[in-house]
Image 1: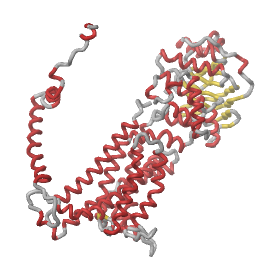
Image 2: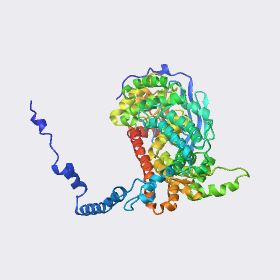
Image 3: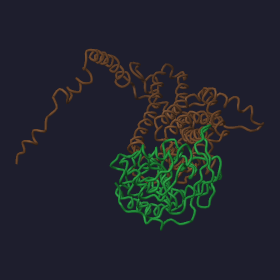
Image 4: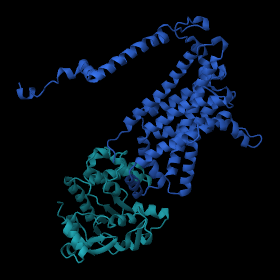
Length: 366
Length: 257
């Protein structure tokens, strides 16, 4: 049966607005000025991209074990390959490196279910990991238990050190930041004043200063005989510093929650802490996910500053390798490599935060 | 515009005192919001409070569950005097339900989670039981099918009914309504008022700020008119609407009716 009235309703959009041609016309050549920009950008890409591919991939040397294996026409990835272990583990003894791998593998396996949307016990598993993993991590990384020989922290380095610093920094800075943010909005004057003072002092100081003080000045105040591991001191410095930043990010989220939410929770008889953890923070933290991840990414990259107190993170150990007389003149490859590794981790965090935002979206605001 | 059923009047009202306010004063900075409020509410009473905006009616009922702190006088709720003692405040709050003008549902939780949150975390009820109770109340406010949606997906009228159900899940002895229909589109007012009428029929002690005068006439057994922080006039609804005694009341009624 034909239904002409219905068929006539189906009108195709004009050809010029759909498909590849339509897209090009709309987005690249919509006006004379845009056409000029498009052509300029195209020229710029043509000039820069092919040589880059030529250098990094086509002319590059991949296999070998000394600089003689590099022709010098393209990148010499042999440098990275021969040094790879050191870039990953620092000076961690060869025979013990499996412990680092094991620690990260266990962590990856434990956290994997947290990324599965349908997994129901995220909260309990997350708490269990946060409470239990530090012990396991300590035993594996540092040793001294279960027949594992101790590996002093000055031997730690490379990507492993970067991940340890950033991981612990991230896990601790967030809760401290949340507490500081709540403190800054507290009705109790002493708590509020203490939080404001803390935040303003730590935010006003460069991280380099903090690290330098933690490494050089802090030991002067310790009683005789008391020493604190250098890595631990750096970590404390990073956490104290970043939690001040985190506090301000979280405070922004707290301020965005309407008063009615606090009141509704109070009217139901929820105590302050239950109100915060069940009603206010879940909403506030969701709003500031972009800001939190921004701080995480900054923290991840700021770990490179530990170089100035003699800890060799990924960037530090790559730079240190430039000084090797056998490998002079390969700094570009080193920087490109470490830059790429940093970018991979930061981009991963960024992508995950976007997934999280989408998943936590529950329709319109109140 | 709502059902014509009238609560079986005086029968549900008892002489048991639920709320006792004695000479309650409250200031916002220099501004004297409540100027010596004396009010006794008996169990089962339905009281409608009206008055021009800024007259202190909202502040009055917010003092009852201590969302606002009174600075002078006494407020005794079901035998517990409100003081700065957090234990007392939390006990009173878990006995007094409150419905807000803007619903204030928790947008990050589903309807069912909104309802079971306080029973689980304040009363310590097992989650399964709390959800069962929650579903019963959703049935009573006639939206059982919305249990797994988020508040943002519901209409205003549905959200307000969820908010009423959320308060009822705590088994309150007193319900406070702060302009529950003012933020609603006209076609949704009835569905909310119907729920409130039913609640009144069951003998719930209710204090309701509203300008729905039809509701006041059929449901309330006392109407209180407030102006400039004082209770100007209180009377049975028929007397109040037909024979207002005070000039200010007459003026107000002439403006809204």
